[in-house]
Image 1 (cartoon, protein in one colour):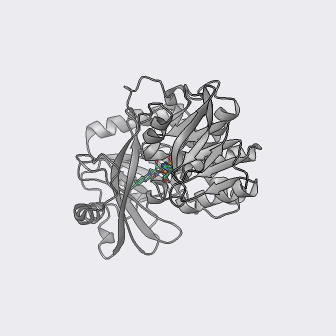
Image 2 (spheres, helix red, strand yellow):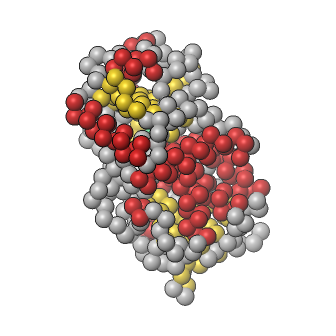
Length: 378
Ligand SMILES: Cc1cc2nc3c(=O)[nH]c(=O)nc-3n(C[C@H](O)[C@H](O)[C@H](O)COP(=O)(O)OP(=O)(O)OC[C@H]3O[C@@H](n4cnc5c(N)ncnc54)[C@H](O)[C@@H]3O)c2cc1C
């Protein structure tokens, strides 16, 4: 098999797969290189939540587009990705949170997210049956947010890449970025194989900084461990994804397709690094946090726990840009939102690459930017 392709993508998660799909569809010959199995990084460890409730124009608009892709994926990719618009409900237990959410809602509506709204505690119980509303002032509710199954989405994209003539190399670790004449020329793998291409995309998620360093480019992405668990499947309770930002809160949802509850919380203090070890503390804490919000879950059994990495940038926004090395692009640093951003980010990355990276499509995603403005709904 020839080792030449138009475009090499490093990373077989949602970002690499979606980018590869849109590039293949536009007529490019794509080679996707993944050091493990597809979805072995963060994508296969995420909880499948999809929301449009952000506070920056770039992320809100991208998520409006992504939801459009998810809802059309069965037809577009020919695979059931278990898209279900079950909604997201962000809970406010303090006046400060309430005011922050009200302000976010008006920003979100101004950028086109029309169905997001404030619900008081009574209405919160209507949209989330079984919710314990003790101390609850209300919440930010968006019924068109939803869920999908990450393995199916990536599989759908990858099958399409193959059908367009692209190649997928799994269990193939990139060890060097080849350069020559002031531009990228391809990659060398840990096993010593060389693959040539005029364009190389760094879609390595939590490892994006390491890949950047191979090309001499600083990519400010830091891995941070997040744990998750899943329960047995039970009757569907019609509860949206619940997000409780309190110190002893968490976020969880029920998959529509099999009735399993899946959830996580952000550890305090955070746990930097690539570790994907599971902790007893999480296993002990997470079910209690879920029960506090939905007491009816008491008989539901936890069947598995795991951990994965968020891929954080200093300001909580992704990086999508060309780099000073001609032909070398970065699509990484999704800050724990990469699954939901994936479809639109892949489309945008493909557009950027097809336009030879002339203009970074969204200024707030530029590699060289002021990283001091924080995304508030992290
Ligand atoms: C517990 C948890 C819950 C989450 N929940 C959600 C959620 O509900 N919704 C949401 O949108 N996001 C969620 N996320 C975040 C989401 O999983 C990530 O943002 C997203 O998967 C990032 O996708 P990616 O393609 O950039 O990275 P990855 O999926 O990590 O893909 C990068 C790939 O690059 C490969 N790679 C790295 N180095 C090399 C190399 N040298 N050579 C070849 N291949 C290499 C890796 O093996 C990896 O598979 C969650 C994350 C965690 C950990």
